[in-house]
Image (tube, rainbow, N blue to C red; front, side, top):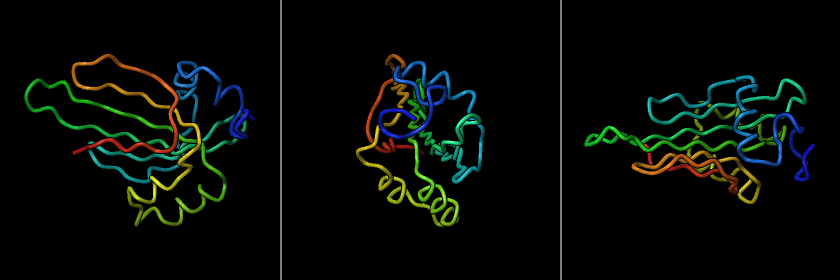
Length: 130
């Protein structure tokens, strides 16, 4: 487990860029919300079984085609995972926002006209989306 008590060195390493690369090894548990520009997925580490909630948000740029895209990945507790599974048919952005507001999360930000950045943040950050 990391210093926050979540994950292992394979799925939740200290460096944000390495953590983003480790994301490719996570298994998809369930799609919680599947819209064309807004997706919420539960992922799990195949090594330590840590579960994560992953949020993707995109806003279509009808002018330049440079769609801003954002991902947030947050480790979740077993209870939070069970609550998400139970409530997935009625899951709201407010319910997601309530998850671990002070907990370290992994962010990938690709704003319109800006560079792609991988960084640490806190809680779930749901960007505007279509």
